Amino acid sequence: MNPKTEIPNTWLPEERPALKGLSVPGMPLGSRAMEGPRKNAYQVDLRRAGPFHSLCKPLAGSNLHRLFMNIWLLFLFATLALPALAHTPPADARVFFVDLQDGAVVHSPFKVHFGIEGFGITPAGTTGKIRHRAGHFHLLVDLDQPPDLDNPIPRDSQHLHFDQGETDATLTLPPGRHSLQLLLGDEAHEPHDPPLISQKITLTVE
Image 1 (cartoon, one colour):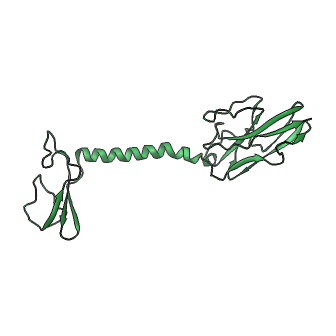
Image 2 (cartoon, one colour):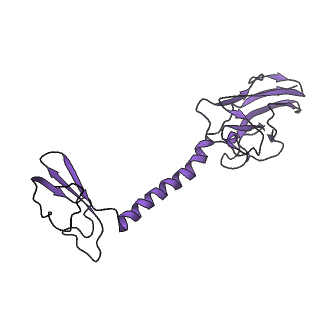
């Protein structure tokens, strides 16, 4: 018997091969004992004494619709997921202060150098593929907690933006204790996921 033969809605085709069993996966409408107002194309699996054979009708009707729906959902998932993944820094990426240690004593004004490993630096507003592999620095000054990491980083005296891709800054702070922390932002000033944020350091300005 040709395994490509289309089987009508009967228990078996007219030919009577030696079979061990027959099944209709999913019990679709139109198959035996599942008669209804409509008939769907369905697959009949026959188990012979030897290799397994499937005798199928071509995809049609709701089965074809289901196939296209699955393809569309996969495309939609890829469209939504890939940009997010593209902005995701590697697990070993980090940002840090190059020459300023926690507990340092400095005189104002003083210079700070920003360091980054495992990711790149590019100006704010950058377009093209490089924006998925780079960001720009923001310096958080005297904040008790980081800003909302799901929204663009604010721009004020406590959230300093380095939009041109600068990797250093000269700071003028009043005498006393201050805290500094680095946070990388993407082309729209939003933190990455997961965020690239440094350890917060405390320093004393004399």
